[in-house]
Length: 498
Image (cartoon, rainbow, N blue to C red; front, top):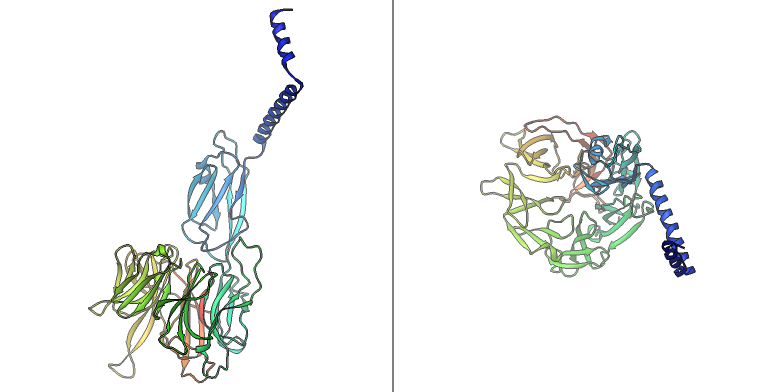
């Protein structure tokens, strides 16, 4: 026996049965791993996950992703990705995952197709398996308060996705007269104030806060939506009158102005955080607005406007003298749109950042009643302004005439859009995708009954009309534009579902 054979024999004698079993297992596992690698390489190169596949998206949905099962040539993806109708966005990468961030909100009531082909792997010229998927946007739905017949005083949903066959749903019962409402961000429910008819002269004093389900559920984390019309009481009127309220756009915070029936000195603003009981804030009432994130409260006070932090992260209280009107917030809650009185009888539109300096947008001779911020770039305002028009019957006498104007924040231009005669208290609502405005026009009379529908200045509403105004694409130096509103139902206080 040679020395090599003798050495081999010695090694074989040292192996025990258990060692042979382990060695066989190692060989078997290595073979399996090799087979998996070879077969895996033969599986098709493809998109294996699209985050918006068959999803309904809305204003809050700003990002989708595509995940690939192989390393991919990113340039060929960016060149060949198409979305129809077009949906502009910015692309970024995290390994094999494409992140697509929208530049504008998607248009509501639209079906989109995303398509990808002729994409190469990063390490050879193998082409991707063609990818096609669909997603859609939320329906175009508005809510309003009915004004006639069985709709009078009731909360109505109106789905106009198919304008030729709109769908109407009455949400609230006949034994409640709705006075105001705010919509939760997922459109699944609406917060509203209402009183029972025939309250013996105590109608508004006895109004309570409720929620009602809409039958919609745009939260994809919830598997089932509730039926429409399910009521829940949020705040009763047993000891306090509920005057008015606001809901943060994230749906987390309710602010209510309340007055004690027996002690008028016990009045002011209360807060209802989500899932917690109502508690007073120790802040006097007045015109107020809560920020979209629920962290700040802006209140009109004597001599100016106060900014009240509602969370420790919101900073310190502030008071802004000579400011007179709260018009809105930026979407990220960082800036507040305010109206300021000037000594020369003009008014200034101002973006106020609590951590920085106020930024004057423009000065106006006309009073400004309300503004809606166009959501696509927050570079455009649509505002209700008041003009003084000389009456035709008597020289030297003037009447107020509201009109709708568009203000470009970048160019600081102010273009009149539409006259709104005979009614100052117009309610505006900007569509979530920024392509249309809702507004109402009502006819008022002196109050005749405890059950009358009322405007904010306590005039009885005799009739009302809802209008839809498609918004034009304005050019930088455009000084005028002609647009025609479309007549919808009779009603008042229209609001888009977000």
